[in-house]
Length: 506
Image (cartoon, rainbow, N blue to C red):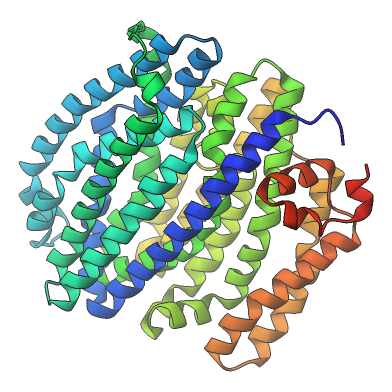
């Protein structure tokens, strides 16, 4: 194999690191929710979800989108050898978000009574008051994450985000729930986990990026930072609101029980984001640093799209076929009511993440921040209108239909926009082979769900059957490419030995 794109190697190395971290984080995240659903009622869990949704929405106003400028400008300055300017971007963004986030936290603390009255949940006043301290913490947390992205050292992010935070949160939450603290235990676990993660993450970043942090600082003009960040700030506002609007509408039209059940279904369905979330942090800087080379950008887009759909599609098939069984086993039987939610969201997320993701990572890397904002408005508007219309009629399924509609729509928009602007698309014969492998995998998995009565047996056997048939289909159609061999070699030389000899000898 010759003339390999080193960006593919970087994507594989850093994507592999973040994938491991995302798996650990996902397992711990599911464990935390399983813990919560067994120790508190759906209404208490739903109240906690509502409160944290308000926090996550509010904190977007606190950072003004500025952390997103770090992993756009810093890679460019580092590539040009201007380390002082790279440091300047990080310092300027950090100082700004500390001030703005503190002011937003104060404003929220003064508004808790009104918010509790709006949702007709008096206990939200105390929950929001306690959680308001996390707004500046979340701003610094975001700065640290994008700083890791910008230097392509995502193993440090894994330590902070995927190991320390969920482990500490799980331990604290479990201890307090066992002690009978209920809602306060959920809140304390959330706050303490975040605080410890920031402390460890800051220490690791200072140690590992010491050369960058000790460079002579050179402040950069705020204009480019603001012009790039403001559209993305508005995008983040709409995007986060889109992610939380389902909970807000369910809390307004229905009850906190429905919020809790929908949240479990949404979390299971959105698990398809794991591969996209593993590759996108390094994909954006790789696109940003070569955005003038359209052919290279298209090649990287095609490689990423194939890998995302190749790993995500079997997971989507398993979830779609066995949603009720997974909800009943992982949580409790009462959460099986969210099975339609899981099926709808699994299909929508699969389509969306394959073609750039809900946050427009590809468009961000190409510098089209205003277009990302416009797409996010479409995302939010479609979700809001459909959900508001259907939730009073069909309940939590109406919220799922709203989210799925928006995700499909924005995925299609992104495809059309990048093709119109740069002539870029992910569709190749090799891509079609990967998608086609899902057909026999679905046919093989369906009888298990139809003819097996035990949820435990379905949970244990369905993924094995689907994945084995999917992989055999890939082998039968010779779906592996040179880039696959290159990426597999970066993940693991042992896995490389399992690739067909014809591919290795190309």
